[in-house]
Length: 99
Image 1 (cartoon, rainbow, N blue to C red):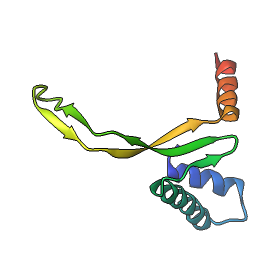
Image 2 (cartoon, rainbow, N blue to C red):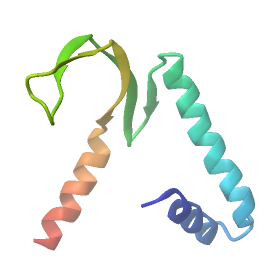
Image 3 (cartoon, rainbow, N blue to C red):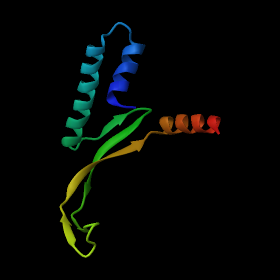
Image 4 (cartoon, rainbow, N blue to C red):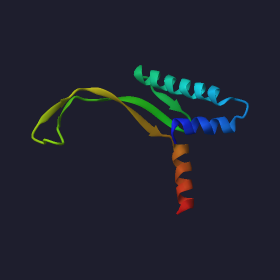
């Protein structure tokens, strides 16, 4: 699902809001989540999952085109998602019904 598909779905389910208002709400949510990760805060959405910014240590990598060339990869933080139990169970229940 893309962001525009999400806006369409929410606008369809909430007929009292214009598509533009839904887009503003979705953008605000994503901006808030991004800002929290930048601050290294943990984001927990009950029933869905949690997001954290994990530190990835500096390391030495290799150029895939020239494997003999070593590349220094600096330390960085990467977003990491952990699925919540309720979401995992719902996805597994839906998957089992289809097979």
